[in-house]
Length: 315
Image (tube, rainbow, N blue to C red):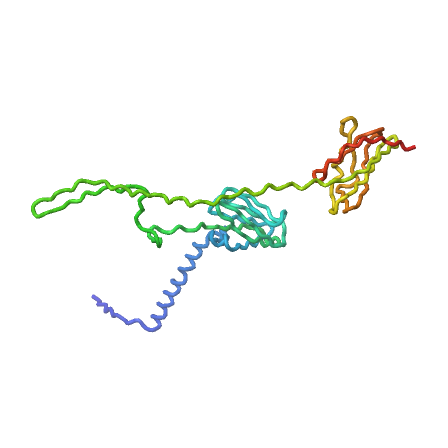
């Protein structure tokens, strides 16, 4: 029978290096496999979301760099009521609930945008740019966070105060002696009466004096009428006897025949007569007349008495 002798040999330096290299290769291969698993979705793009707080956008404006072909979605904590910008035709808007969708129609310029939503007004500045390939940008406006219940508000008691005028519940007081204890009867506590202070005497206020309306301004009119058999023209000269300029409208003239108003065409809108001076003018009627009545009914002038004119026929 042959006997085999086994010997335990110690690892050499070369063996240690080989073992270390093998372990390093396994370690380096593991992360690459994990990375390929993590980034396996090649159809997922980069981050498109930006956040603001409501307090920021009510004191400062948020900058929106909008390019042609992009859609910007802004989500507010409250319902969007309207949108206002300084120029029409450079931006397009669409609102749905608490979201506002914005697109650029122009490729240059910078325009402010004001957006009322809820009880706040938010401010933005849109800076327009040419087309850079389209895309979507998402903006979220977060509402102000309410204080947590653990936070104490300085100056306010922890317990709720009783309403004014409410009578607190009567309490029972017990007096103990060495031998017995006697309960005192319950006595209702009445709220003290509050007597309002006497009203201070108010001084008598006299009514303001009645204002006297200004006297109407007199104006003298000299009138003439002519007809060529097809149309009629009325010529007037207005004389101002006062020291102040007088103004009236030519449409304040009233022309009629036996009480029936006549259509006419003024030749000037506003007539101003200088102080102590006169102005001439004419009115055109599209029909031949033999006589008519003329008066001037201006709210700033004294009414003139109607004048009946005989129309002179031109040969």
